[in-house]
Image (cartoon, rainbow, N blue to C red; front, side):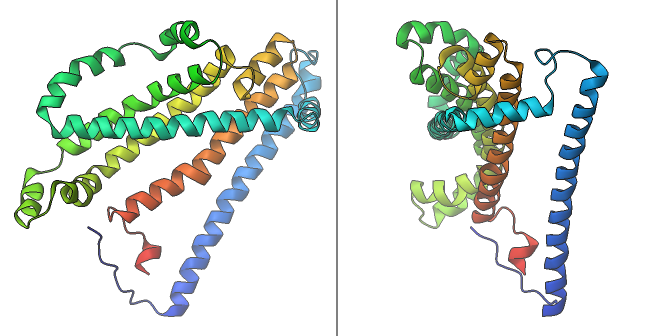
Length: 283
């Protein structure tokens, strides 16, 4: 069910100016963000001689940049970043499929809710970190431990938000479509999913954020590559500059995931189902 596009009464010149103003505002926000980063690194560099600590306790931006270049030249950082992205993407995809599927089943069926509800509540009460020793005993250190842990983290926000979204749908909408001869699959695709989508997207964003933090934590404990392992390795080797490189990569990678993937995904899915129609699409 998509909302009809609204015909614009604005003349082409006004539309051009509106688009130009939006583009200028986007560039202004980007420049402000860059200026904030430049100011941060400048203050950091100026604070090094004032604080007077050794490079081990308080490395300068120049030393961190040197460590970054070294990791790039040795091919370590690209491999670690790609390994982290691969683990994260796989876990988010599988966790999303499981969380949404379980949420739909429980939200649509009282029988399934009675059977699975207590078990899911019990599992939710167990902190994900408590599973790591058991996972390591089962599978050792490596890919399986991290993937299963991140899926576990990802599932619950999606599961609960999907249930809330499904149960908030007025029954009259489903009955109205059913009287028109819609099949259960058509009701699911055309009524239930569009109506529950804002809640699902909320659960997805929350789960994706928790899973990213869990990724770094899991890589510190159960991996030999990845950004989390880079942070842990730097601290173990008393190479603080390398640890800070890992922390900076962690922040930059999350910004990239959020800006390049999560936000466009949110806009595309929500607008695709007709929940939101932006001014640009209306025009």
